[in-house]
Image: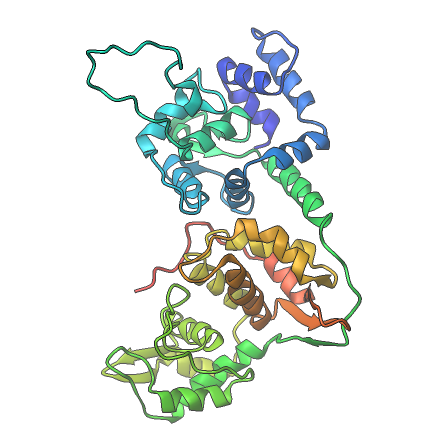
Length: 412
């Protein structure tokens, strides 16, 4: 549903609050006038550009998490979890029950937490032993309330749908366009570099190489379930891309089931085979399943779109806004662009993951994995600056694959 339709289902109190935010000059008692005034107020693209300029970074992350989710409706619990993830470590004092009451309070306006504080000059009884509580930090309920009062979130209008929230489809598109304009102003386009890396189809080929190795060799597993170093090195020699073994004792977790045991690319490849049922870890041995044998006999490469879908589901636990980040890289790197300004624009969307800084997440967990997946080319210009560009196949894959924000792989 678009904004006009959702405004039609909203009650007059909510319409009046939205009109107040946009300073609409109209009768507050006529639903028709309120709707028309709101639609006129939000019709100019300058409004969206200005709102993005003034938007707190937490709200920007929250907005991005909604824009690239293919679902039409969100539960309150889902929205609270998203808003909490977007705070990047800030203490959150808001519970779901508090959020439910906050978004339903008719007097709530942007900055609603502040509106509930006691007046500064209210006298305090000397007999009272209670201490005055400091003002709470704005939390998820305030973010959700702001989005609702701005007309960016609406309750459902019938049955169980009343407990779900919707983002107008036309507003989604207009926010994407406004964000694209904002990001493009900082992006630097470049000519084609003299050398670049392009790994299209190599990951799919290496899956067949791994399956063939498992079929032909007796592969014992350690107590932890990983291949021994000798077998791992033999597998790495078969791969199209050279990788070094992880440094012993280094922290490695969160990006895959076997991420702690194998290098980044091999870890992704191995986990794909395991979760797809092509290989099995049983009785301290790594073996090929019937599905793996059929795959090998048919010499059928995995579809690049399926590898991309798996990577999103595997990595989004550690990188919550991964879908939005990939979509912006796809949007901004249609031609060769310098990676430094691209990184600077997208870093605010990236949450550090334990010992991985936001820069490391961007460079190693996003850009390099997009290269391995064949979505992106990476090169250097004549001045030695790194440049990137989406491949034609990568562009089609990113635009064609949609993974729900809640659809991620739980690591055991």
